[in-house]
Each structure stands twice: as C-alpha cells, then as structure tokens.
Length: 312
Image: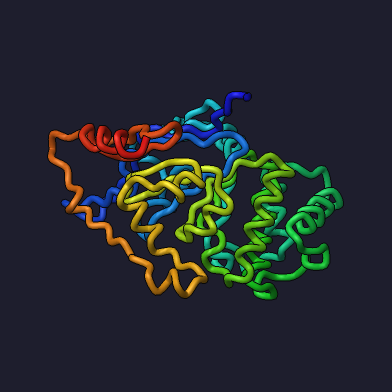
C-alpha cells in the first residue's frame, strides 16, 4: 500500500482575537493535524468552537497568531511576495457558507466564475475565457445560458454551485468548504455533497469540509476531527469515530443525532457533556494521543492509560 502524501500540515496553530483588555478570545488554541492528498477531512463541532476560524486561518484570510500551516512543503504564513501569494491563492480555494452573501449581486455569473481566470491570466482571449466559464458551469450542473444572469435569479442550491464553479476555475489542489450546505434546504444538501464527491474523484481534489451536521460529514469524509472550544478533542477515521467514539464530547454530539426510527427516538438517551467533570489540574499535560491506530484523543497521561485499557 502506497504511503499517504501530506498536502497540508497544521502545527500548533493559534488564532486569538483581542476583544478589549484583558479579554482575549482563543478561537483556535494550538491545534495540530495533517490533511492527506486526495482525502476529505471533516471538521465538526458546535457553533463558536473555532472550526470556521481554522479554515480561514489556513487559507490566510486571517494571519495566524502562532503556529504553522505547511502547504505542499511551504509555510503559508511565512513572509511572501505578491507573486508567491498569487501562486498560493491559485492552489488553495474556499467555498463559503452563505451562497447569498458570497456572490457579488452586481456581477454576472460569468464575471463571478471568471474572476480567478482573469486574476491569474488563465485565458488568452475573451472567447477562451467564456468557453472556460461555460465548461465550469456545465461541470457543476448548470448550463451556459446561466452565464449572463445575476445571482438573485438563482436558488440557494444553484448559487452554491456557482460558488463551487468559481473555486474550481483556477484548478486548485485543495478546497476548504466552510459549512457549504448549512444554508440550503435538506433536499438540496445531498445534491451539493454528491457534486463535491464527484468533482473530487474527477479532479483529484483534497477537501477540508467544515460542518456541524454530523450525519452529512460522515457521508463525505474519510477522517473526522472534532473541535471543542478551539481545540481538537478527537480525530479518527469517519466510520471508527461514529462506531467507537472515545472522548465524552464526541459521544455527546453523536447522541444528539436523530434517526428515522420512532422506537429508537423514544428511547434515545441524550448524553450531556460537562467539561467540569473532565477538568484537569495545572500539572496535567493534555494533548492528542493515539489510542488505536489512527484514532487520536485529547487526554491526560492518566486518561490515556485508561482509554488504552478500555478501547485499544
């Protein structure tokens, strides 16, 4: 079996926001993980846990407070020239949560999709530019007649397809999808996720898929990281995480997923995570430790021994 190739390496990444002395919001507080070429890593957690901030910091929409993001062997947050930044921006793209706010209402779909093509000079002339736009629209399930329309003429699902076409226009290697389906109707969510899976297969894309819908994350992700208050508390293969959760917060999240089974729902026991019950002393070092092969959990040395005895 070929060894998996690391595309993105996150090392002790921190993103703090100063909201007035002495208050400091530690939105991302020293997280470390890798994303392998061709995989989808899901990042889940409640609203406010820092998952969207993580995505925005990786792509340099925010400058990191500390730590490193290594993409294809290069430090994303190192000092870069305009030319280097431009090259980096072509390889890493983002699909935003709100398909209404993320598209300029004054621009036609053709101009929105072609923005990256224009910036990076990927078309020799206007005819080639429009052919690329038409091809991208058809790739995401729209048609060339849509090119001259404006965003307000489309449904939410169609707008998100336009956003995906815009991200694909510069032929990126890595796409951060920041809750790309949360603003869409349930009936449309599966269509968008299936489109993303197809595109990944066809174009060899790597995704960081940020969401709070755990059932949809399992469907699209190879591995899943669970975030809680700026930290990753569990990271494992998607099926392993769902079948054998270890951290009490992960168990709490999974216990909240409803199933279309009246008998199950009647007897479903919701687990409540109380961090006070798992408080640590100042002397305890809490870090991600491997309990089973590829299954990491944030825990102290004492918990590590208990988890190993119970779950390995």
